[in-house]
Image 1 (cartoon, rainbow, N blue to C red):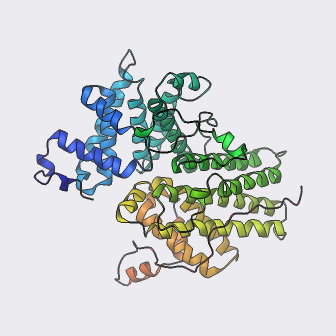
Image 2: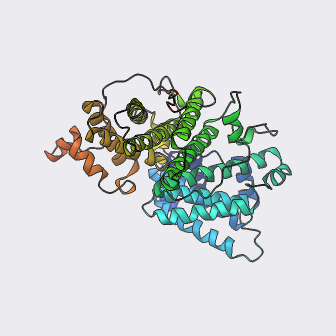
Length: 457
């Protein structure tokens, strides 16, 4: 979609500020609202009209403009200016002595959008600091922690939902930042209810949503939005991260008991409350955020089973059925990631652009799948042809969507040595570049989860 086409008489250097701002905001909502449904558009537009001089309203406006310009090539000339203005306005909000401009949902959401933008840039340290700033601000405002229920209870349903969603988005982005560093998350487990389904503007009364803990523990199947489902997948990642960390630092840690417990939870996710998102029969009608949910849940499985493989090797169990089953599950989960990433290339133009803008949310999963296939290939596990084909797909995704600067140094070199793509071979001979994904790879059945039997139980 061309956002300039709606104002055909205007060109970038002649656009009025208000017309350009509308185009940038439209581009933001068209490309980011489906993956970060945290801003009540009607509420924001009303405040922009009534309080256009407010620093916190303008900070959010420019943050939205930054992402809108990033998503629409014809508006790309506004990225740097909008980004600089957002950072300047946030600093002005912080410097205000009475704190009224800082203690605002607009300021908090500006931090979220800025952190998301910075996660897509090479300077990761800056993104880490910006997200930390937003997380601390949200906690100070009382949207997470023991006081959150009383703070949110006095708000109307839409305002309370918007604040919950904003904190959940910070929770999600914090985890994706942790995936890059393996440092401890800034959040404890969230205790506020999960986001409600539907558009923010359609929320008329407080819906009764479970917490993450209630979703995992309840026998009921809750209807969750893809956004809420993504939060549940992040919780699964945190459990897996804690499991691996504990096994490395606590000699008394019950590794296998916790391994099977987490595996059982993943299977419950797939079979119960995430079934509509995590087990698509066909990817043809799947929205971009469902792809991200599916890919990252499969990555949790890769991480979980690879840790089991490593543990089995250390305990000299590598020839056991336990190790063989973990290897099979790791291969299957890695193939699930590749299957979904291949299908993403067939998304319609708009959805593909949305997926491209969300590349920071698939970096860990894509990298993990590539590392798993390299390990399997190096150890002679599974089908060499399948591993090579999958590595070619993953390398194409890294180059076309993620960017080589966001993956481990040397990873693509390893892939190119073991699984050179046809495109790159042709490129060396003067042929076309390597920006297109392979059209097909060796087929496999639809993704299947399953419970492992604990031989020590």
